Image 1 (cartoon, helix red, strand yellow):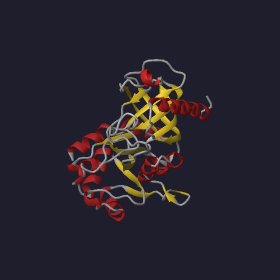
Image 2 (cartoon, rainbow, N blue to C red):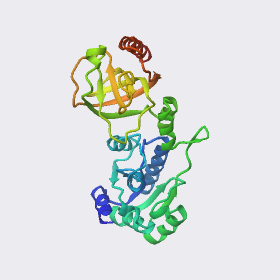
Image 3 (cartoon, rainbow, N blue to C red):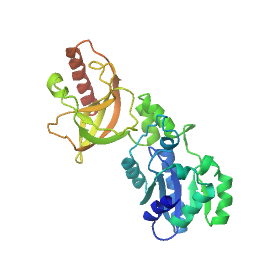
Image 4 (tube, rainbow, N blue to C red):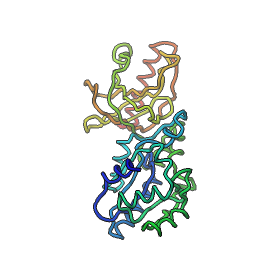
Length: 309
């Protein structure tokens, strides 16, 4: 409880606060709808809107053996939440102790340590140990603790609920159109340029940048994509491969490597952002290096045509 209060107090603005709380992985259109409701109500009531986001996913603590992937790194998520119109975003750490807090203990921390006087949530929201803090419970607690509760309307696109799990599913299938529709933007991933196997520039004639990924980073389906890559504030057309490089490996970690069109420079250690535009093809195992090179040439030309370069 003390750790939670410390994190809330550190990011607390002055005055009364209207807040919302969640993981917000991807900051998709459903999240943006919730945040717009928060900002509108906060403005009307003369309060400061605050988004409280979990720095780590609850499942990584409660079920550590269960694979968990995230659409956005914490840094990218914080950037996106700020871009959605909220100046005050507070990341808090999900711990076993936090999971054991009752709904009243958690809500009291928001009121006492953050100065929350209004809370905006989605229609499926619940909080506290075993998700006992349902909407009726939270509404009742509000009369005791001194906050009001607002439930934002359900958000759908063409009859489909926009959820982080739906975005992750579409991404895993390589369905970038659905991903873009649900996010309201193209899927991107961030990371530093790391050393690869050194095969691209020498053996293949296509020097690539290998993007260092966090262990929980969600990736598109294995294959080759037309992408934009942002380096030091500049954008370049690029062809990006996602997968295990089956021509050279039977079993290897998945990697993301990009060939930047019309670029010559050493980017080791530099942070880059890869923006996925279109899937060109699935991953293939070629019978020879020459066959792979010929296909890579076609991938680059298709990328150049798609991106208008």
